[in-house]
Length: 180
Ligand code: HEC
Image 1 (tube, rainbow, N blue to C red):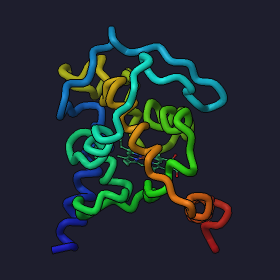
Image 2: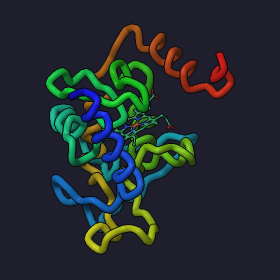
Image 3: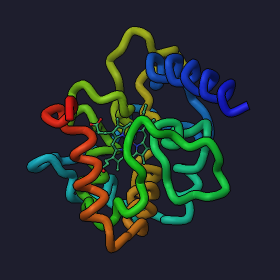
Image 4: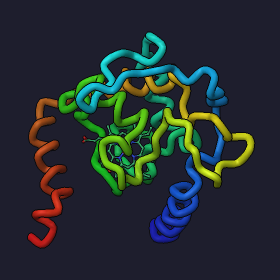
């Protein structure tokens, strides 16, 4: 059972990773006209998008949602009711102790600005891709409000061992230690 799920998940990933911007699910993303301007300074977006106030409870629901953001396809998070969480990247537990709101907002808005080759989708970016379906054309995956909700939720994931976990993740990811 576990094995067949993994195959399904991998297939799902292959499909979604190549067409992440092409699906629209959950609440409708906003059209380009509403794309809030934001300022990136030193790799962070300090100001909330459109000055919106995030709601951590809604943010948790977004992270747990299997259609909307697919966070749990790649990440694990302290959301015990969701089984089969991802291990393609770090566990989000304790992230609120390791990252600031501005860093988290940047990561969600456009992770590619932090790592051009990341597989993590840019959730608040209008992709100039030809593969995007007409319905998704000019649309972001998340709305500004959804970005702020997820940021608010991630900030609640505080963990005293956060620094330790972050070190461990960095060690795992660091190319320099790949052959270790
Ligand atoms: C397709 C896989 C994928 C999906 C989906 C995904 N991520 Fe990521 N995420 C990654 C990877 C891989 C990294 C590691 C950093 C990099 O690639 O640049 C990462 C990094 C992060 C980080 C930084 C972690 C740290 O320890 O510094 C956060 C926070 C994060 N993701 C949150 C999210 C949230 C919230 C969602 C859903 C809205 C999400 N991710 C969806 C793959 C994904």
